[in-house]
Amino acid sequence: MTFRQFAFNNVLRNKRLYAAYFLSSMFTVMIFFTFAVFAYHPALNGTDMNLNVQRALSVSKWLIYAFSFFFVLYSMSAFLKTRKREFGLLMLQGMSPGQLRKMVFLENICIGTGATVGGILIGLVFAKAILLIGENILVLDDKLNFYIPLQAVGITVVSFLALFILISFFIATILRSESLISLIRSQRAPKSEPHASIWLCALAVILLAISYGLSLFADTGIAFQLMWLIILMVGIATYLLFTQLSVYVIRALKNRKPFFWRHTNMLLLSDLSYRMKDNARTFFLVAMVSTVSFCAIGTLYGLQPLLNRANGATDSYPIVYVSEKGDTQQQANVQRVEQSLRDKGISYQQVRLTLNRYKLQTDSEARMILSASMFNQASALLGQKPVQLQGNHTLIAIISDARMDTANQLKQKDIVTNNGITLKPTQIFVSPAVPNDSVALIVSDEQYARLGKPAEVTHTYMWQTDASHKVFITAAKQIMGNNVGLEVTDHSVLEIPTYSLYIVQSLYGIALFIGLFIGIVFFVSAGSFLYFRLYSDLDEDKQKFRAIAKLGLTNRELNKVLTRQIALLFFAPIVVALVHGSIALATVARLFNAQMATQFVIVLSIFSLIQIVYFFVVRFFYIKQVREALH
Image (cartoon, rainbow, N blue to C red; front, top):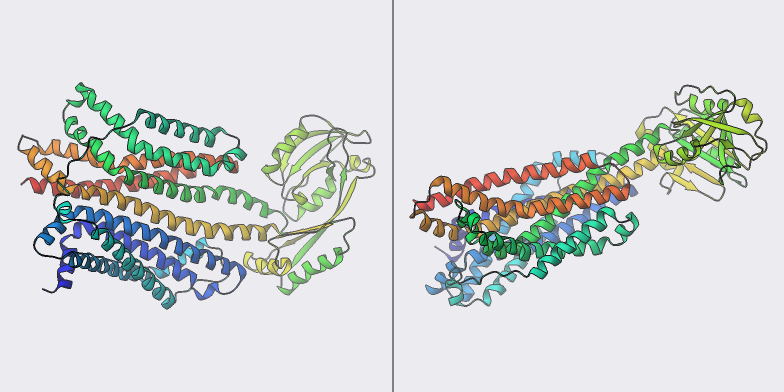
C-alpha cells in the first residue's frame, strides 16, 4: 500500500466524521458554481439592468468564497482535535512529523477535490432548474437558456482547489507545533473546573436588555444610527451568554440537590458545564451565523407586502407629465412620449387637465381642487364610476394609503378657502386617477366656478394604453433614457410608475435571489458546525456510557440522557438566534412602518422545522453508535 493509498483509506475509515464536512463543502461549491453560472450567462451581457445583475452575482460568489475559507479552516481544525491521539500513535510507530503533515495534506486535498467535483456535477444536473428559478426571481430582459458553463466550471475548479490547498498548508503549520506527548495524551488531559463571573453574567444581561430596548422602543432614526453599536453589544452579550451565564446557571442547578439527584439529571449535569465551556465558541458562532441567515431571508421575504402595496400605484395612468409655469419643453416632451409609443406600435388615449391649487385659510399649504367633471374625465379611462356632488359637500381623493394621515387631518374640520368659501369634507377614498401623488379635494362644478383665481396652475398630461407589460417597458426605456421612471426638472415632472416599479422589482429580485442562497449557505454551515462538535465528543461518550452501563443504566435512560444532551447542543444556539432574529425583524418592520409579522413567522417556523428534522436524524444515528459501543 502506497502512502497516497494510506491517506485515501484514512478518509474512508473516518467517513463518519468527514461526511458532514464533505457534504457541506460540496453544497458550498455548488452555490458558488450556481452564482458563477448566472454571472457568466451570455444573456446578462446586454442592458444596464442585466449587467447590474451580473455584477451583484459576481460579488456575491466571492463573498461565499471568503466565508468558505473560514468554514473549511474551522471544520478541519475541529476534525484534527478528534484525531490527535491517532496521530500520536502513528508517530509512536515511526511516522515522521513531515509524513504526518503530508498525510493530512493529502487527506484534505482528497476531500476537497471530491467536494469540488461533486458540487459542480450537482450544479450541472440542476442548472436548468436553477436558471428557471432565477429567471422568475430576477427581473431580466432576456430568458436564461441552458448553456455549457465552461468559464464557470473553470473558475470554480481553480478557486476551490486553491482554497483546499491553502487550508491544507494552514493545517500542516498547526500540526508542526504539536509534540508527541501532547498528541498521545490529548483525550486524557484533565480539564479545569469551569468558573463563571457574576459580573460578566450581569453584563451579558444588561447588554442584551439595552440592545433589545434600543431596537424595539427607541426612535427609528436613533435605532438606525446606532445599528452597528447594537450589533456589537448583541455579539458581546451572546459570547458572554454561552461562556459565563450558561456555566453559572448549570452550577446553580447542580447546587440544588433535589433537582440534581432526580432521575438521570446527575448524568446530564455532571459534565454539562464542561461541555458548555468547550462548545461556547461553536455556540456563539452558530448563533450569530444563524441570526444573519434569519435576518437576511426574513427581511427580504417580509418586504414583499411593501412591493405588493406599491404595485397598487400601477393601476393609475401609465404615463403622467406635469408642466408648470416656465416649462419651455412642454410640447417637445409630449411629442417625445407619443412618438415612443407610436414607434413601439402602442395605441393610446390622452387626457389633458389644467389643475389648480388654491390657498386655504385653514391650511398653510395650497391644495389641489378639482371639479367633479374634471375628476370624472380623469377617472373614466381607468374604469371608475363617476362622482356626483351637490352644495358644499367635498370628497378627499388620495392615490394610496400613504397619504391617509394628511387626508384625515383635512377631514377633521370644515375647509375654508381664501375667498371665504366653506367646503365640508364628507368622505376619503383612494383613486388611481389622482395626479401627482397628491391629496386632491373634489367639489361640485358650481363650487369650483366660485373659487376665484388659483395660487398655482399646472398642466397635466396623462396617457392610457392597452399594451402588454413587456412591450410597454421597452417603450418606457426609450422615453426615460437613463432615468429610472422619474424625470424631474425645475418646471416639469415626467413619471412612469410602472417603469419605476419595474426598476424596484429588478433590484429587489437581485437582493432576494442573493439573500436566499447566502442565507441557506449560512444555515447549512451552522448545522454543520453543530454536527462537528457533537461527533467530536462521540468517543468520550462511548467510554463514559460503557462504564455507566455496568452500573445498570437502561436503554430508556440512555436515550433520555443523550436526547437531552443533543437537544441542548442543537437548540441552545438556535433558540438564541431565533430570539435575536425576532427582535431584529421587528426592528426592520418598525423602520419600514410595515406589517411583516406573518412573513417573519413563516420564515422562522421553516428554519425551526428544518432544525428539528435535522436534530431527529442526527439523534437517531448518534444514539445508535453509542448503543453499539455498549455491546
